Image (cartoon, rainbow, N blue to C red; front, side):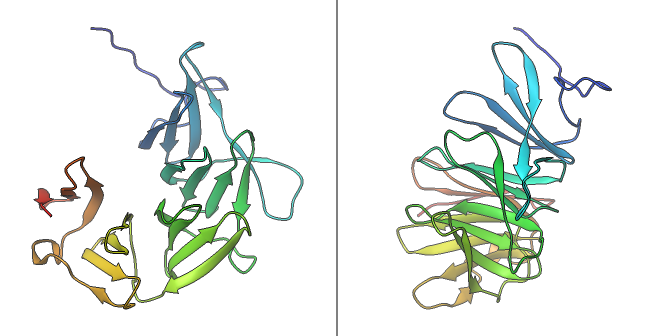
Length: 219
């Protein structure tokens, strides 16, 4: 088998932006997006090099390199890409564009700690210390859904029951859009530090934790 290691090289703009990797994503063009503690790199298979990513701060013309901690990378069916960052909030890239657009909340920066796809054309976003929001790219607007969840590091929307699972550092919660209620769905994860949420092709829910192992919940 072949094995390669990629690292940041001092003053080499074609190398990985940072060596502390926190997220990975492959897009439709088969490029590898690498989220790090200090920015985002895109790997090109043809040249075996990386390129850094830029965004346009809200209300500014000059572009800036993305150098915040990357929380999550999500690609929508229409080809749009969303990045949750710790310092620069939500960054949004429309298909065919090369520079991300910054989405502010009340003209202020925020910590976008988790994102996931929602209903057609919409995104769910958790803002640390504020709550759960929806983002509409057509109007470039954020709408508060609930402030009843204090923190969330992972979100997973279930269209079947119109609810979203929120993985937090102190357990797993579920928000029901119809009733507006927040409940603890599974007592096994009531106090766990949730690190990831995933549904497989059989619709089983997989819950990974920091210290309490891996759980599977069958429908």
